[in-house]
Length: 395
Image (cartoon, rainbow, N blue to C red):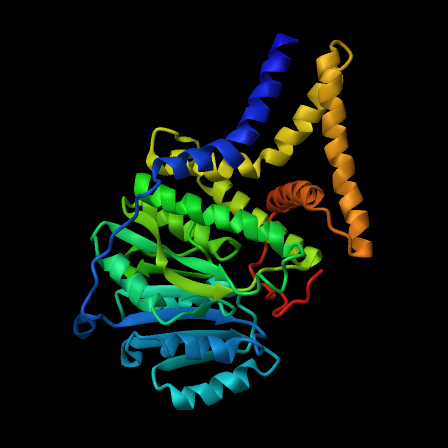
């Protein structure tokens, strides 16, 4: 009985630690602190390679390409490599027309589906520049994006990756949808990654939407991995280099607001996360290294929260027969589950109660991770993907 109680409260502490204590303590420790980077004179800027894989991105591809070339970083110093993964909409036509306007735009139109990471691996073997920026089609650059990434990356020879600060472009439009809960989570992630950058020189994972890396540090990502950004971030940190975020390197990206679309995305990411864990578990479990402590505190505990929740519920049911306290605790747990179910029903009538929606978002996100774990265990045979819907309507 005592052992069961200890395990139960250890599990609950783990959940509160990873979601509340860890990020808030780190953010408190770095209050009023910031990272400083040297500003490189424009005359001394190096040539950079931007790499991107796309599939059916006709809605955003032109805006994306122009945002890369129309910033304050000299266009002549940007080699933009885009691989179209057998797109069957107007993406290829748009890219072909843009090639006429931008001489350093290099496009490759694949006739068979390859998957994002296989296209990026392909480009990393041939790009000529020492600095590479990996990005997604719906991640729109601002005027200073590339300049800030390059300045931060070259400000210290020990910096291997610089992450961007993604600004959500549809906040007002989707204030009353699932995007509100996702925005809260993402904003907290940004603050936590900044704190990790300052305190440890290691962030849990760079944003897949856009990050800069020194080409010499790139390690080929396994062909079936779904969370390539995670693999790249870990491989750079393992080589002894810093992985940090630069809040001045801003990009724009919309929030997924359709619950079904967002949860499919979370399942995919969850599957990729567990792929990375089972590939090199020692990295996540060695708490005596900076990368191990950050990965365990920020990521690993969250990935296994669904298992902790199941164990806590079972343990509480057992203990409820012996104590009124655990009976009340069981009632609270059951109530949160019922609130989650009620939110799913209320959505059908476009009714949103903020607290209930946050509880529902927490539970459904962990269900997605659980499904991702199962899919990882069953095996992933391909990394071929389809992009989430662009310019979504609020749900």
